[in-house]
Figure 1: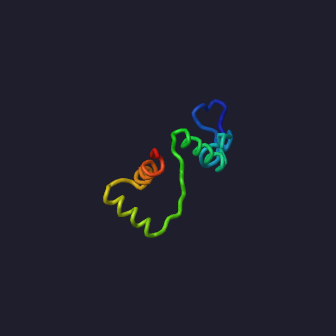
Figure 2: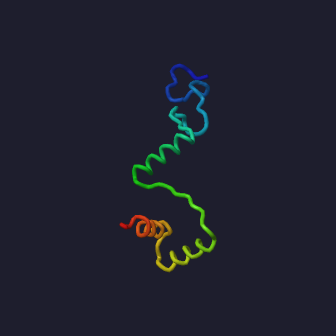
Figure 3: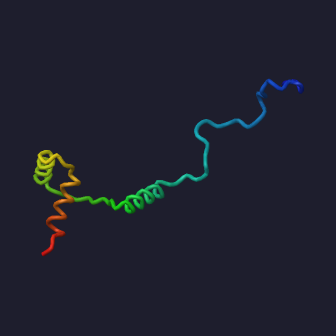
Length: 89
């Protein structure tokens, strides 16, 4: 208990007891909502994901080619698609 005239001492029992951690904002998103936002952002930037299955031999050849040309796999595959599939016939 503190005296009424005491203006310097803090009250030990008064006020709300704060919880540990970061305070809640009430705007938390679910994992699905976060992923949808991420996909929309990537689509707006013109980036998409492609999953493919290739043989081990083709993957090893790609790794050797990437190492030889000092490029990324993304750049090599995109160039192959552009030159082989998107060429004028």
